[in-house]
Amino acid sequence: MFRFSAAAIVVLVLLPWSGAWAQVYKCVDGSGKTVYSQSPCQGGAKSAAIRQAVPPVPAGAATSAAAAKSAGPKSTAEQELEFRKRRSEEAETAKKAQDKAGEDQSKAENCRSAKTSLASLESGARQARTNENGERYFLEDGQISQEKERARKAVDSWCK
Image (cartoon, rainbow, N blue to C red; front, side, top):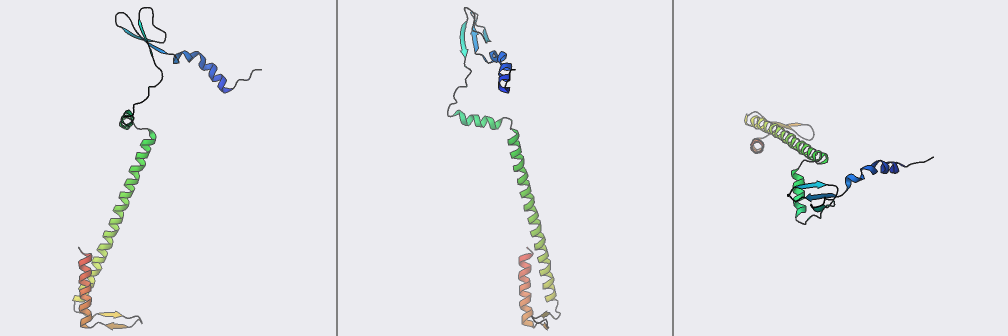
């Protein structure tokens, strides 16, 4: 018979409550008592209608409103954004710490290797090396002193 759309049903249901959105009046009676009501004031009382529209925001108030919003409770989206920011900062800090630990370990290994090489050269034992053909040869005194100097520089640079 009759077909109602969803919008028509909503309008029919909300129609009885439309008075709840009516104008609000501020009434001050003869004794100075203030009363707020949805109907105009009675006989001798002063009547002032309170506007339902939001007044325009002054130019300077926009920044103070933003500051007030930031001081108030944060929305779920703002909390999520802050959480993600903290988590990325923590991950970055952990990565930096891991990189520093890796560098420290590498530096310690290089220091140990340089000290071992210097100790071997200063031991007075014959020093042998292998050439590109895979043949072993022994270092002469001049070559050993050059190797010692290189090993000392390596110890100085790695073992600070």
